[in-house]
Amino acid sequence: MPLDEAFDPSVLIFAALAVFVLWKLRSVLGERNDREGPTLGRFQPTGAPLGGAPLPGAAPISSAAKPLPADRWNGVAETGSKAWAGLDAIAATDAAFSGPAFVEGARKAYEIIVSAFAKGDRDTLGRLLSADVFDGFAAEISGREARGESVESALVSIDSAVVDDARALPQSNSVTVRFTSKLITARRNRQGEVIEGNPSQAAKIVDLWTFARNPRARDPNWKLVATETVH
Image (cartoon, rainbow, N blue to C red; front, side):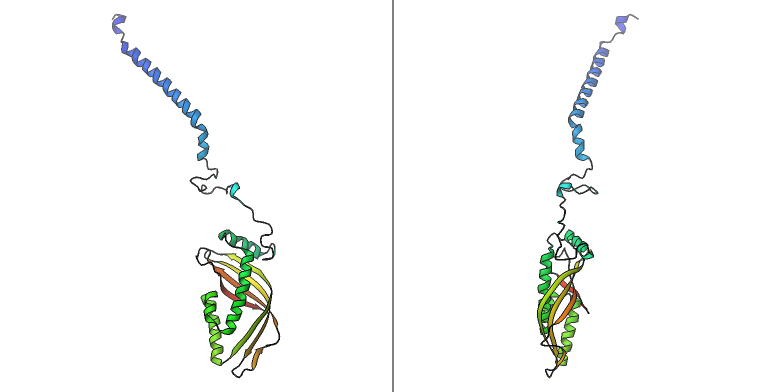
């Protein structure tokens, strides 16, 4: 068969087209690699924010980490104590928590509760005590009312109020305060005779009162959940 009869011009056309397609494809891929290569870093699990939130398991972002002051609980709890560590844990769950403000509030609550208990003021106690503690206080008030007894109480001073223990629990933060105070108290019978205490002499009292609050609750107030007198 003659050579010119076997030659088909379309072969050249398809060959040229194939070469062009391969060249174009290589050109396009090369341009994409050069342009988009650096953006891969955006999808590496480096802990950088993704949509405003860190990737799961990522380390905290250094720029957001703010170390707590070394003297953060001075005057509130003993340095290096269990209470100090507990206050750190509470502060981690409640950004609004302030040690000095808490202790100041606890001192006021101590004074109000001592006075309300002596007067038998159940309404005031109900706002400051947990249900269990209120039931115990109310039972004592009812008992002395039934016996015709009365209580006189005067808080002379609160000499110290220091956090003795602090815990961050799943549903509740609790802080135990050790109060050292001077208190004048006397119990009188129906005839007005003193049957307990001394109406003219202050006695030193050491109490451990525990306050608790759910950090997720809307109510910002802490309530008294336990009391203990240290002898």
